[in-house]
Amino acid sequence: MNIIQKTDDELLEIAIPMWDDLIKYSNKGQYGKFIRNFSYNLLLGLNEVEVGKQFAKSELTRSLSPDYDVLGFIRRGEHVSCLFRVRSTKKEGEWLGRMVLGYEEGEVKIFAASVF
Image (cartoon, rainbow, N blue to C red; front, side, top):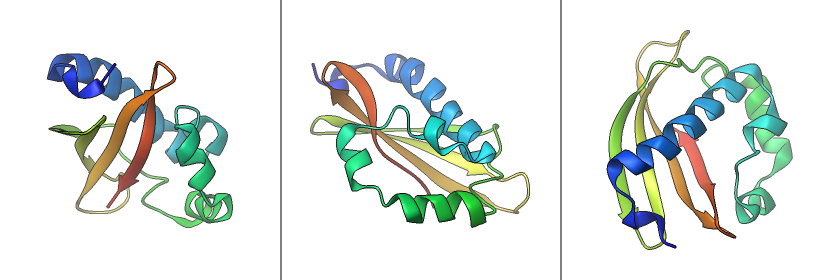
């Protein structure tokens, strides 16, 4: 199964709840819940000390607005990049949110996530 074969509407049904969870658990600083849909390889590559610092010290990652815009999808290989316009409840401006989805052992998992 290849996720790039899904329609935009099918991808939205998958991506929106996962992105909502990332925002919610990032804002709450709940690392364990934040990473629950991450792929095994992503989890192996994470530096938990650095991610912990991000949760503790980053004003942006602790103040992401639940109101965002879906900008679209980029399909490549066996993954789809989901792009979002993100705002903060404390900082002025807009950021680009990116979440990369793909299949791992028959389940959709997050292979990358960032706000920049």
